[in-house]
Structure formats: C-alpha cells, structure tokens
Length: 150
Image 1: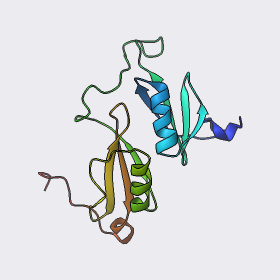
Image 2: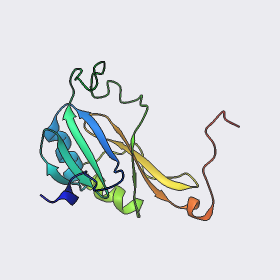
Image 3: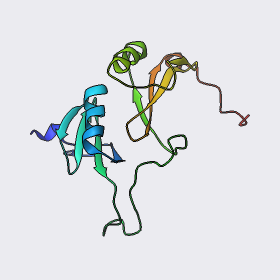
C-alpha cells in the first residue's frame, strides 16, 4: 500500500467523509462496485478511495475517550438529513445510466436546476448522496434561492 492510497497528507489538510454503517461489507460493496471506488482497507476502518477523496466507514458505537459524550449510529429516518455527500461529475447522464445499471436507486433522474443538473440517491444505510454536474454556474447562472428566503 502506498501513502497516496491513504487519506494521510504529507502537508496541509485533506478532507475525508466518515459514515457510520450497519453492515461494512454491504456498504463497501456499494461504494466500490456501484460508485466505482477503490477499496484501500476492508475494515477497521473500511477506507474507500473515491475519485479524489475518501470514504471511511465503521459500525456505530458508544463514546470513546476522544468523544466522551458521542454515540455513532446510522440514520434512523432516511427522509430527514442534516448533511449529505456531494459528488460532482463531468457527465451526469452517463453517470446516472452507469450507476443505475449497477443497482443504484436514484430518487429522480437528473433535473435541470439552472446552475447545475442534479439528482440524488441513497446508500444502503439511507445516507443521501447528491450527484451534480455544473452547467449554468459555469456561465454565472445560479439556482433560485430556497423558497421563503426572498
């Protein structure tokens, strides 16, 4: 294993995303086989290199000395979320077709949101994943503000 395979910068900062999962092998298969990531470590923790970032996964658990009041658990309600993984792609239609053929279940096909084309899917634990392709924003066209904010 090479240092470049791991989320371990020599200098500066590197961003990874940690997911608490119910079943590591199931989630590992989704991120590797469906989304095309590379398994760096299989477990303890599972590390998947996905494009230019990493997904780190482990089962939930109780507090530890470095997070004494925190319990990790996957989401209980897939319809309520406070954060999500955001994947940017060069060709959303090709990505949608490829990942759908591999078993990904998108909430909708890609929708034109003026600034971007985007759609969402869920991983096996219900984590929401946005897939987007910049379109209008490359020319200074941005999405409308959220409802009720004008």
